[in-house]
Image (cartoon, rainbow, N blue to C red; front, side, top):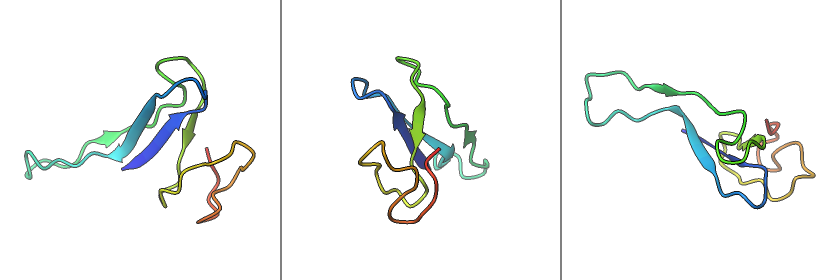
Length: 72
């Protein structure tokens, strides 16, 4: 799973996306969860954290300081 959060500092909306963990029914394949491009609460763009999981501390950075992947 990956993580995204709202770019609006006054909004605390967030989302986990990627492949969901299907532990309730092991015979079923995990269901993919699509990332949201815009916040469902205020309409601002969502900030997607790279798979390394390092949180974005400033909006000035365009790349993750831990893994070098671009923020989306």
